[in-house]
Length: 312
Ligand SMILES: C[S@@+](CC[C@H](N)C(=O)[O-])C[C@H]1O[C@@H](n2cnc3c(N)ncnc32)[C@H](O)[C@@H]1O
Image 1 (cartoon, protein in one colour):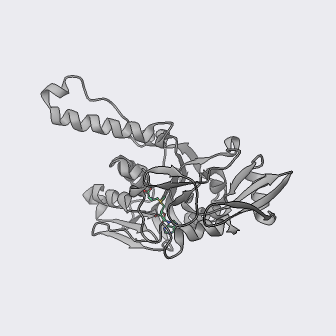
Image 2 (tube, protein in one colour):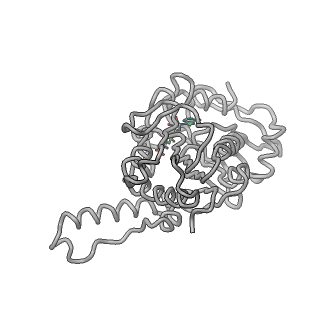
Image 3 (cartoon, helix red, strand yellow):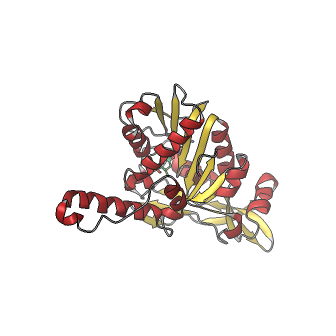
């Protein structure tokens, strides 16, 4: 039996852990960078606003933290307008370095300094947390064995208990978001000039789930959270506590953010199918992808937490 945070950490990041051995999100679940080029297009628009605000520096960073298969880094690099690409330094930060196009740097740890845009796309949800339960008014850490069987551990005290009182007071079961707060504050602190953006599924204090959200993903299906290294383990992110830990920020939905960055779906013009069927197909496919990215019950409901004021 181990504390859930230790078991979760080992299951994902020990040398033969799920992500450490190179499992890619694309084989197990769908994220926005896998839908198509539209997320990268939106982030390039955000990056161009950052660039303008910084006075077009000689070198501009795009840092993709927790890059997974590197799809977002690759798309940002490939789709950047030539004039920007000459000054653009795209870095994929990933424990298990992905294969990426020439021109994209890969590293295992975060750079010391960022001038430009740092993005954590579905990064924070992959940071392990302590899991707690409340019984008879007492908050205890949950322990778990390699088969996923849980037992009640010692009472929670100190910073974890303070975090729960401040950020998740009415839970019967919860994930303590402190490690995510610390990771995000550290990442944002590395941005010397520019902006930082976290995109993730999450919740806010006004609407926390009562029973936590820890779960597993494997081969495209949601599965029980067994910490044996066979599957991804994840839980929604307390976005407002991450924001506060990093000194503020603005939280909005992905649907709203994409619209603000010029990504909106419109059906192809009527009659186009007859005059230019290939263009009609292209436009219809793009509209379908944008509908997926902005669906409020799906990816469109993801939270965007932005530090820096580049959205209108
Ligand atoms: C849920 S996946 C998201 C992948 C990708 N960003 C996407 O949205 O498709 C999270 C990734 O973050 C990586 N990761 C987690 N913490 C990390 C860290 N501190 N440094 C580098 N990579 C990390 C994991 O190895 C995993 O590949």
